[in-house]
Length: 571
Image (spheres, rainbow, N blue to C red):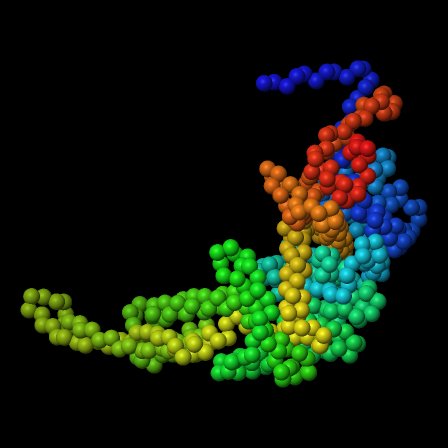
C-alpha cells in the first residue's frame, strides 16, 4: 500500500522540522547543576571584545552532544542545526555561529580556567541540589588510550602544563599506544562521580591517593568518610596519611604483603574460626549453588597496626580450584612434549632433561605442586659395520641408544595444602566500627566505580579521541566527567522516583520488555526522534506549530523526571 500524497504548501509558506528528542532532559539537568553559570564565573575573561557565542554556551552544547550523539568537533555544528536551538541553550541567531573552531577554542578556554575550583564548585552544587550520601566514597583509575605522536607536549618539569600523553601500564592491554591516567571517585549513593583528575600516562596508581583524598576532604568538609580503593592504596605512606588526619579507609590487601603469606601458611595447617557473613543467589543461574561468604579477623593485624579481615568465598574457591587444575594440565602437557633444541627426539643426558623441566616449572611457579620424573628410554638401532655404501654383503650390528624423557606426577599433599587457601582474600582497614559483614558489603560496591569506567569507554565511546592538542584532550576528558555526572544523576533520579511511585519496572527495552533499573541510555532513547514542526510565512513568523506524538513510556519518563512537557507539545 502506498502512502497518500503530501499536499503542497501554499506559496510563501515553508515547513520547519527540528528535533527535540532528549535534549530538554539533558538541558534540565545542566540547569539544575547551574553549569552555564558555573562556567561563566570560573572561566577567565577573554581579552578584547567578548564573543557573540560565549564559551559557557559552547561547552554546554558539547556536553549535550556527548550525552546524545558524540559527534567529532567538526560535526557539532551540523548536529546542533538539527535541534531546536533553545533546548541546547542556544539563541536562534547563535546556531549559525557554532563551528569546530569555536568548539576547539572553548576547550582551550576551559584548560586555562582553574578547573580544580570549578570541579569543587560543581561537586558542592551537586551535593546541595541532589542530596548525596558522602559517608562512603569509592576511588578507581583507568587508562584512556590514544594514538599519535603528540610531539608538542611541554617537558614534565614545566608547571601549568597538560597531563603528558605517554606510555605506561596500559589497562587496555595496548602497551604499543600512549595513554592518560583517568582517576575518578564516586559515591556509594548511585555511584555518582564526585571527583575527577587526569594524570600523566605513566603515573602509578599508588601515587594518586594522597592528592585525591585531600581533595575529597575539601568537598566533603572534613575527613569523616570511608575512603574505599583497590590494593594500590595498601602502602604505609598513603594509609598513614589518612590515619594521621583522622580519616578512615578500606582496601584490598595485596598478595605481596608479608601478612598475606603468613596467614596462608598458618591456614594450611590450622582451622580458622570462620563465621558466615553473607549468602546470596548465584548470579550464573538458579540451578547453581548459592554464593557463601565466611569471614574471620586476623588477630595480629598488620605491621602498621591496622585491621586485617579475611574472607572465604565459595564462588572464588571453585574458580581458584579450576584455575589451578587448568594450569597443571597445561604445564603437564608442555613438559611431556618438551624436546631439546634441534631435531633430537629426546634428551641425551638426564641432567639436560631435568634442567629444561626445571626452567619451565619455575617460570610457571608450580614447583611445589608437580614432581618431575626423568624416564630413561632405550631403543635398539642397527648400525652398519665399516664404511662405504651399503650392499648385499654389508654387515650390521645392534646398538642400544639411551635418551631421557620428562614425566610429571602431582604432589597430592602439596595440592591438598594449597586447596585450603582457595577462595581466600583479605581487606585492610583502620575503621574499628566496621563489622566483618559491613566491610565486605562496602568493598563489594567497588565494581560500580569500575562500571563507570566501562561506560566511559563503551556507551560514550571516549576512544578514539579525534584531537591532537594535549590541552584540548585534557579539557575534553574533563568534560566527560560532567557527562557521566549527568548520566549518574539521571539514572539515580529515575530509579528514586520509580521507588516512590511503587513502580517495579519500565518497558524501555525493545518489544516493550521491562527494565527494573533503567540506565540513562534507555531513558534517553525513549525520547529520541521526537520532533517539533512549524509552518512559517515569508518573514519567518510562525503560523502553526505541532509535535510528534509522544509514546506512553516517554510520557512516564518525563513525569518521573519532572520535565516541562511543553517542549513536546504536551500540557
